Length: 382
Picture (cartoon, rainbow, N blue to C red):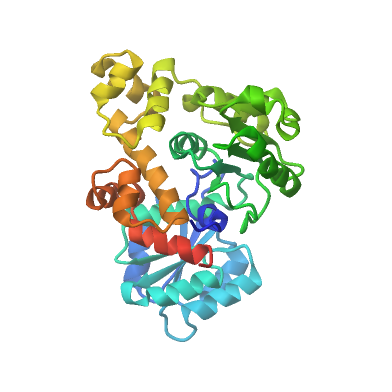
């Protein structure tokens, strides 16, 4: 397992953008008027779009308009994209740049990401992937500090991640990554979901305390009575020590109390009815198994029609769609944190084969699994 995954997840998956009083500004830099027009058409409903036909004009707009996100073509006459990127980073080290490249220029895009670009998209682009990349970059501009999830219990953590990332950036790490590399700033909250015996978890908790001395820490453990005999765990406030298996709604309520007033958890997650939460908990525990809506309805004591209704009413998605999202969230972690073959990643997520996994992953992320893994490796410097 590759342990240096914090930068991957921190720069990979992004939360829904925070509400602002103005439209965010996106600058499109490309010498092709047709490309500028096409990108403007995709983006203008959500963003104010500026365009520049070359590097000097782009640098001028960077100084005068301070765009929130920049889409920068790599191959341009005169000042090339990588040179423009370097000058932008000199002028504003925090500027959010996404490179636009042809498929045969991906190697150059990788160099650009090492120079500080956040992401790259290829021509012809997938509209969903393009919007996801721009939204992710935009959400980092002035966003509150996020939540760091540490643990290997993939199902429950994926359910928690899906709930949290509606409102806050979520970074995930395997528990072996003691060095916690790549974090750009301290999180607002650290959550350690421990599969270890309390005595064995004590050393890692101590390391977290040293690394994040002023950050609230929440620990999940299978044996809370034994945990209370371990000084490092007993020192936690009762609300920050949670026994596994836990209920998602209870954990979300405790998390909401620990986060700053700037971060408000989506009410639809915190106040879902008990049947929906029980269905989510069941999926988190059994996502690797073949699950039908009928199976889940039986597990929570509802008819299929009733479960379908309360689930869609509460979350706005179908039961099967949520299960796919949960499995894809697990898949993102496995792709970023392990070297498992695609068949095994798919099977561990509950898919019959790599082809099914790849198709569903693409539907939900706009990116193929192999491409997601390559980007993750670049972002963590592997």
